[in-house]
Image (tube, rainbow, N blue to C red; front, side, top):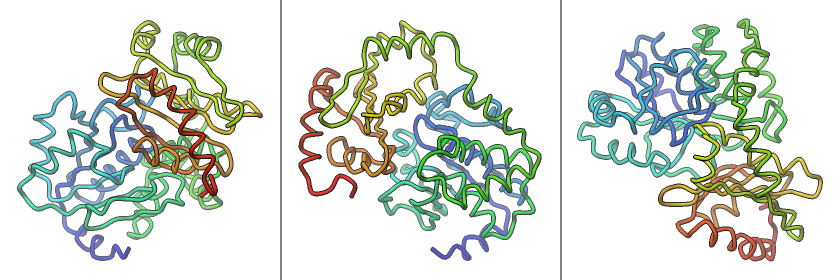
Amino acid sequence: MNLDELFQYLQTPRKIALLTHVRPDGDAIGSALAMKMYLEKKGHTAHVIAPDDFPDFLDWMPQSNQVHVHLRNRKTCFAILTQMECIFFLDFNAMKRIELLGEDVQKLYQPFVSVMIDHHREPDNFTKYRLWDDTASSTAELVYTFIQMAGDLQLLDKDMAACLYAGMALDTGVFQYSNTTPKVHQIAGALMEYGLQVDTIHNALYNQYGENRLRFIGYLLTQKMQIIPEYRTAYMSITMKEAEQFSLSIGDKEGIVNIPLAMRDVDIAVLFTEDKDKIKISFRSKGEVNVEAFSRRFYNGGGHKNASGGSSRLSLEETERNLQVHLAAYFSGPDVSE
């Protein structure tokens, strides 16, 4: 999409909100903070609003303490939104992905310019402008592209580079997933030129968990993991009682779904997480197995070919039992890689 009209609009100082999806990850927060800093350098007023809390291992990101959390202070966030001239929707492409925050956006009476920057499949058409590419590794990559298209790469600094690098690293599995393209390495290299200490960033992202998380992973692998060999699938589940028992904080469940993929005979990994009113489901896969299509078909989900999410309104036990039924239906189809 031609964004020249948007870039022209942004030549005048504006009041801009930057929204992320629920349970924001490093790509969402890193992209939003980098875009905030970029827009402020352009003379705009920018606010980041997240629907709920983000993991504390992202607290090191510059200006992370300025993120407004809608779940904790809905009135303040709504008051901010009523003053905005422009809203960026970052790292999601459907209003349902911001839940109650989306309801507040739809209540706004004043007109605002809307912009989507995202890399997930099958976006809804709810913004005037969008920079969308489902072949991009991350929204952080697209934010870099956006700044480049605007002719403003000279405005990048070390803080912005650190946020974008972290977002790209997290969404590519530290540059090991199939979405790691030559362009990803080129951008990462360009960001490193700003003097990033990548070992420090990696340590902040991956080595800041508590003892309880490691013990919990051991418990899951020994007591909870189940294998469905005929479908090369492994699954685990987390109850609310277990999360409380192990004192899991926001972010402690990050990456757990990927662990079973270390087995040579497993191509699909599934994690069921019990919540108050639903079961949250994370899917990961290797190679050509398309869990995005699987989650969309059976779990009202979506995401990426090898990494997706969904949900179920059934009980945890029923949801687990249905997995094998759904796998049988899926694998009996024409081509699971489509």
